[in-house]
Image (cartoon, rainbow over all chains, first blue to last red; front, side, top):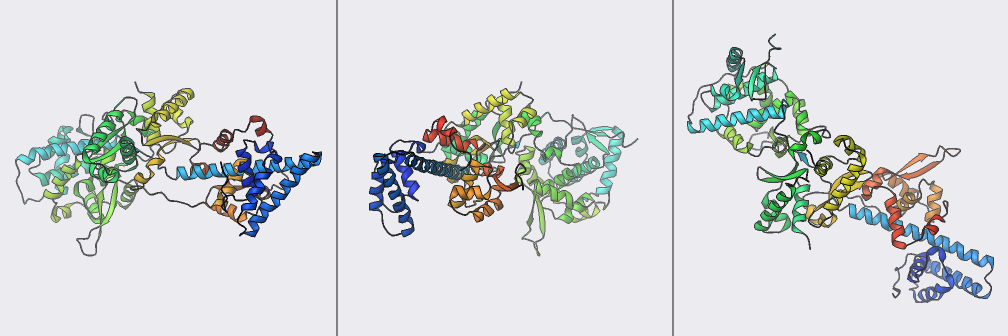
Length: 226
Length: 182
Length: 182
């Protein structure tokens, strides 16, 4: 692997140092300065000397490395070893920061591309007494009725009074105590009246005058009527 | 190279009801490819190891949890349709069968105020408010949403709805005969 | 008899992030059964035929569309993007790795001031400031939030550390020799 000599390839001296350590398959904490100093210096010599602030950081590190290398070769004193260890520790921390930052960035960018999923439930056919099921039953009854009436289609100008209809349906139910929804709607003469009858059933349901049992039958609410 | 099954699955799972045309356009695939893929996905999810299934409701494809897991799933769904109150259900029924309706129409029909019920139904995504561009002043009108159909799991309400809306417009006189207070 | 894989799938798909405990309670199954099932589901959805996958984010399980379908899915779904700058990322990494840290600690690590970055990260909900009750004077300390895990889509902070150990092959000994304070 060749070093890319363009400026900006490395963010700072530790970046280059880390690159060389990895290239030589060293652990940052086991840094052996003598093995990488030459390459480091070679890089700094070929660097663009445009940004003084950045290049001075590299030059300072290069001179530190050269000094430690020469002392290591001549006389590896306790002091020099400690200086190498200090740089190793800093390099290790730098590598930790760099890798963790990369991880944070990668996870963030990946997760930005993921959308959460949420799925609606389907209703069970066996559901009893709950309102949607009641609603479904009414819908089905009305649908049956409509289909029935499709065949004998006629138009009427008659008006159906809602209040009259309520009284009519009420008395029907009081008389029989229990009726199939389609039978109630079946008392209507045309579609328009069927709608009014349907809404009447809704209204009586709302008033708790009646309830719907599991057989799609309208049952008078005995509690309500004493 | 993307996998067509995965593509269609990702689209349907993240969309809220897509037609075959929608999926064709989005994935830039032809009709046969999409139809075949939808079939394959439907078949796969029909397996007992899956708790969700791909359904076609009113021409739109969506995933739903299977009905046998309704009881289980409804434990986590706080605001599910099963928790709609009686009065909300009534408003919903009135709107479903007579839409579009103005607030005044709904209240006249019901015989009592229902602004609160409407607000909650809208927040649950079962109803929505639009402007009636055909009337002067563009008044607000209320209609049920696709979610409403989805929530009830019915695919064929549209036929019924047309019957009512087109053929049985309730005359003003009938409206007026609704008792103001029940 | 319900199928445990289907049950857990239905629950997670319809929930908005469920913990193992949530799933245990809802399905009335024991921990091992749920853990094993979640693993099996994760494995199944990792298959290329699937466009969604099961993820553990901050301890909560949810399904997400796979990132490779981002371009496709983003045609129908919008994601609000909050740009995080390089320097903010660095501060986040420092705090995530070594928390809790004081402002001084963070600046020492980074080698430069970062009060602004911290302020912005707190306002983004990715970090928070608390009092260290164990130290005298109760100094302020900084930690990452659950939102940070959610933003990264990871289950916990160990995801950041384990990956690092694996990639750079630093031995356990070296790892343990890392000084706790810089």
